[in-house]
Image (cartoon, rainbow, N blue to C red; front, side, top):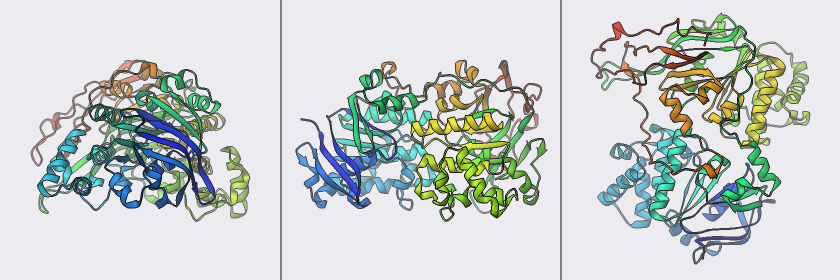
Amino acid sequence: MPLLSVENLSLAFGSHAALRGLSFAVAAGETVALVGESGSGKSATALALMRLIERDGGQITGGRIRLADTDLTAASEAQMRRIRGNRIAMVFQEPMTALNPVMPLGAQVAEVLRLHRGLDGAAAHAAVLEAFARVRIPQPELRYGQFAHELSGGLRQRVMIAMALACQPDLLIADEPTTALDVTTQAGILSLIKSLQDETGMAVLFITHDMGVVAEIADRVVVLRAGEKMEEAPVARIFAAPQADYTRMLMAATPRLGSGAPAAPRPSDPVLEVENLSVRFALPGATPFAAGSEFHAVRDVSFSVGRGETLGLVGESGCGKSTLARACLRLIGVDQGEVRLCGDPLTGLSAAQMRPLRRRAQMVFQDPYASLNPRLTVADLITEPALIHGTVTRAGQRDLAAELLEKVGLEAAALTRFAHQFSGGQRQRLCIARALSVRPALIVADESVSALDVSVAKAITDLLARLQAEDGLSFLFISHDIAVVERVSHRIAVMQAGRIVEIGPTDRVLAAPAHPYTRRLLAAVPVPDPARRGPMTAMPDLTPPPPAILPRGARPRREALMAVGPRHFALASNDPAPLPPRGGPVPGHADSVARDTAVQPAGAE
């Protein structure tokens, strides 16, 4: 008898049928992956299993859900409260929104233990610390009193897993738990779930659209599309011989590391030049009268992007990628170094002086919904930058909008609609159209496809490649998905702890990585082939490399990028810059090793 049995389950939100006749089962100790694009019914299924779908305005319109000998569809709310978090637990995609922002993390986990195990006081405190240690959270006593915003994304997800597993549930539902995480953190979370499953024998229902993750962790796969089951089979059969056309389309759209990079463009003058760029953030002292310190978020970074070229920027969360991108566009201040856009220096310019230059470089953000004005129609939304810069009149806005929509593959009928009426992929196309409205020379794409389905992400990256071929656009493409970066980038820069540790042509960096950190990133990339699945390594902790926090006015040691091949450079040493005691002297900074500009001049990587 399976642990979980779903029989002909149908769900609806009002008059919209979200799921139609879904059946599948999960045995104890088994991992079943539920895959499909956004809107396929994956998350609605998870909410139905927890009987939370009614709270989101949905309802179960048919079928039955059984957990062992318990009929969940007939259970009362009082019964479900005893089951949720106890026999069934769920890990959500975005821990920042799932965790209480005003409640210490330890207290949130203790609440689960109090409700389901009757623990309180010192017993609950000890159980929480044990739960934190079990999921390899470093310094569990410190984390107990911290709040969600004080932790990295990977550590927040570990807290969610600790909370879900606190009562040792029979079934864990993991709803896209690694989608927004970098590859090393993702590998750690997958390893953690697998090791805990081996220890406890729990069943796992893993919801994802990442076929690489499916190949790494699943025993069986259920493929959904628009609320209907397309296919169900063991993971090896799904990858070796998919039966449904839709499954074959998902496989074809899945990025695979080693599939090849685009051909290098012709040498040209640089559109963006960055030389010895540094960005620092002030930190308060321990007391109001104590000397403060500085966090060095970007440390002495140099690179260039040529006309018609895409430079991919990869690295773990918190390494400084987004800070560097914003500094290049002068969206935040620059403390040291030079930025030149189409030959014009940007550093030192006032806001008024920057305004006419901003049309040369535009940005596409990770969350298109948050970056689009919900009050404007599409016609006004995507032409607003052109109107601000005076390149279009109000009378010409609609014609320009229609032209832009056609360019990004959307119909002109969308002109009168609003952002919330589009899918995630369509909204990202609107963001690209808006960026194109001022005919920029450079577009900075900051995790622009990270949260999208594989098929939608491929459509967006194909669109960027077409626009580059047609208009000679340059891109700074930031992503934690190295396989996607390979597909679109002519060169790759690898960033760690605020520094670029390796940069060079994409094929050379990926085929012969010179820096240990680059090799670690590549080793963590999931391979979409279950035949190549190896044993998951022991879960490392998520403690990042020591941050460059120095007394105010001190500077980290400069380190040289050395040539390791044609146009391929890597940091000579993997040792972090030595950090002085807080408030103490900074030894060696007067004699620090300067970057050898003969080795890596800006624009000559």
